[in-house]
Amino acid sequence: MTRFIVIRALQTFLALIGIIVLVFFMVRISGDPTLFMTSPLSTPEETIILQKQIGLDKSYAEQFWIFISGLARGDLGTSFIKRIPVAEQLGSALPNTLRLSLPSFFIGTILGIALGVLGATKRDSILDNGVKFLAIMGQALPGFWVAIMAVLIFSVHWEIFPAAGTGGIEYYVLPVTTMLFFMLPGMMRLVRSTMLDVLDSEYIKLARIKGLSERTVIWKHALRNAIIAPLTVAGMMLAGLVNGAIIIENVFNWPGMGKLIVESTFGRDFPVVQAIAVIVAIMVLGMNFLVDIAYAYVDPRIRYERG
Amino acid sequence: MVLSVEKLKRKRRGNTRWGNIARNLGMILPALIFALLFFTAIFANLIAPYPYDETNLPQRRMPPAWVEGGSTDHFLGTDTLGRDVLSRAMFGAQVSLSVSLLAIVITAVVGTILGIMSGYMGGRVDAFIMRVVDIALAFPGLLVAILLAVSIGPGFFTVVFALSVLAWAGYARVIRGEALRLRNSDFVLQAQIVGASPFRIMLRHIFPNIMNVLIIGITLNIGTFILAEAGMSYLGIGIPPPRPSWGSMVADGRNDLDSAWWISTFPGILIGLVVLSGNFLGDWLRDKMDPRLRQL
Image 1: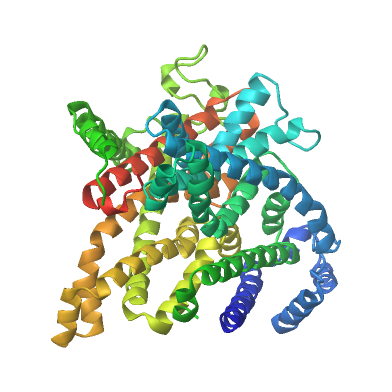
Image 2 (image 1 turned 45 degrees about the vertical axis):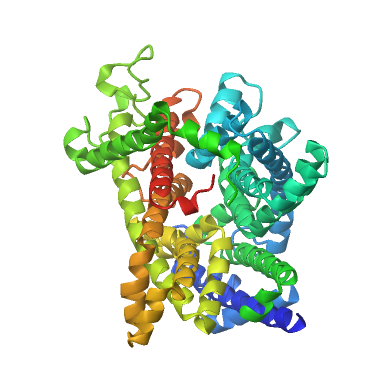
């Protein structure tokens, strides 16, 4: 097991390095950021001074060294546009993103499990069909459009909730609800289908024969086994959450990471883009690593087969 | 497998005439919608009432025909520049379809090749490919799309590339499972005994047997690609304007929700309708061709 963890950790680290190199060069293909920062009237000398100020006069090798050694020290560099440390920018954007995605995540998980279980146990009932309908719609309609329609109905037409911005609890209702759209349908579907499988199994029949109440059978015996499936797709859920944050923050003008990355990519703010990409990569790889370890812990065959 | 009374009942219920019609409706209606979509995309130049970029400022923000103030000249109304929403939606079908279809071909080819190799060859090849697959599947596609769009510059092939660069992994994983299952089947063992090369076995013996899974996967994937393309267009990293795409049309109407709701509303409904059709078609195909894969 230790051997497996060490190998996996090394692989994860290598993948991270690969992604960092890739991101570093990808943002640099995109063009000279000084073009966006100077006016067409400024002289070549001014441009050169600017390049010096933000460190773009150095060779790629030097720039890469500055970037990676800074990263190792926890220094994410300085934003080209705002001229403040990237860490500071992220420090204000990240909490905003978490404020949006964490409630969506928890509500989505709990609601997804509850509705998935109810759909599976009360099969073909009105509730089950409602769940199925919601899942089908959720997987077919584009999230940004649903968000805009929510604005149209609740902000423009009825004027109940604000259309954009941050503030009190009323500002959270629309973004959080529409963000649910990115994760609830998949979650519901997954829980429902694994629950149907589990309910068909021998140990559930045994539990029923033992005379346990239906509630205990479903919510204790069956759910515990069905809940493993959603955990295994934790990585994909994380990806969905990041995608959701990018879209929803841009629709609702929410000052989080999703909005920051879109703005800084268009403004060629390399350090910010790099930092966000690397942070997301660390999150993704870390999640994968943990899931792998958990798998190997549960299923010894994996340790030997895929070490 | 134990056949319970409940299951038999369910089976019988599904075999009534209404059940048959309902099941086939799940194929007929989506197929019609797709046929119409293809027709519109191919002949958009001929059937669209206006060119997609024809602006008409005096007639901007005209409501749809059935709303007060609308006219049948612009059935779905006009946008902020006076462009006909219906015509733009018709041309938008071109973008959605061409981008998605090309991306699907690329992902399916790459995913199938890597999946078969991974499943049949096993060992280090398998371990390496599956590691990359794990990472690709967990990576947020929009982030990659943003990076690509800005580094290569927005355009048709950028969108196609951004859509395919991660999506092949989904195919590779499913196909690998199939290849793994087939690796120890009798016909593969016999081919090995008569001395067929690994390449020949993968191409002639394994590939034909995963066609079903592949076709189902492709159909189910159309919707995902159309949604992803729309998301990119919405963020402004899709096909550059003035060429319309449904996603960018929704974005165009974002600032006029209070005065012209129709600009954002209709393209979104179209996306939903097409994706829904694709998903239904995929489900129907899966039930017909490979009930094993059914998700209940």
